[in-house]
Image 1: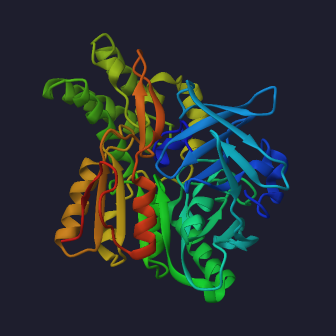
Image 2: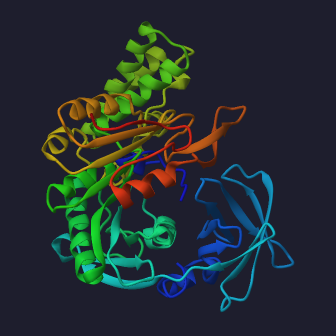
Image 3: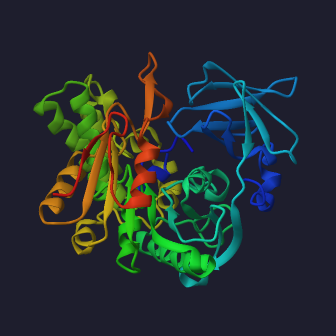
Length: 443
């Protein structure tokens, strides 16, 4: 699912047959949610969207938002851009599980689904779901590890249907403090890692003889959590999507630097922008209780200069535009549990687990350059890490178009992104081409 939040821990500022009953009353047309196999061989997933809407997506990354028309059919707009794309969808009755996608008929796939409540760290009750492809033999099973979002993974994670349609089991759960799970929302990586470990244990119990390879797929903030969890329980693979191998503070700093570079500014402006980064970092490390006078002085010094309006960062932009009183009030909650100086390198040095890291070349919220350099050094040291970079993709591996005022409107996931994750989970390696991505295998 595409949600307009920023990349990682700091980003917090900013359903199918037999499996949807537990949350049906919260969704638009809940009986439509599912993975449909079309008569032309394609698969289309129907996912909940915002109120009154659904979302379709194909495995090649294309997607659209569906709006119901007066005659009961559904019309689509391109990606998240809001522009009509000419695609029309209709459904049969709920009991039929039928779809017509732009003139092509299809039927909903049926999976083996178990909805459970299991004990996370500290015995916090977490709501989870195991989704297995039909059959009796062992299959690889992937545990989906969350980013910083606060929405329900059980409701909105489409990979819980896409992967099973290709022979991969999925365990999805609402992180603590979200959806149907108990506990308080947190961004404490150690606590979240212990929850992920509990999810792996639940998988092994529920799936029994069907357990094959078991691993994690983790987006954004999950790039810090999943490797940490893998040091606490043995897994066979980790897939990190648009995550980082630097600290949250370094992330914000790198995002500011990248934006200055993208706007063509030189070293003199970069030095000034880093003064802004230093000032906002002081506020962050004080848990929003100090540093405001120093920030005001920096703002007064540079506000009139043309580059200042382009200072973005992953969280600095929010601090710059938000009054002090509001920051003092809501800041501590927004970053609850975050270790701003968390260094993931000791964990990555310790791991021998095979890993796939996937990046968007134009991710301005979680710039990947330093992370890629660090991963490359680990590869040179013999770690089994594969990296892949998709050109013209931002956070989430979303391609986009840019409006006149510079805002990015996501249009689709990059072609090859889903196939890359699928193949790595199934086989432990990549083969062939995956869209326009640049893949660097282990040396």
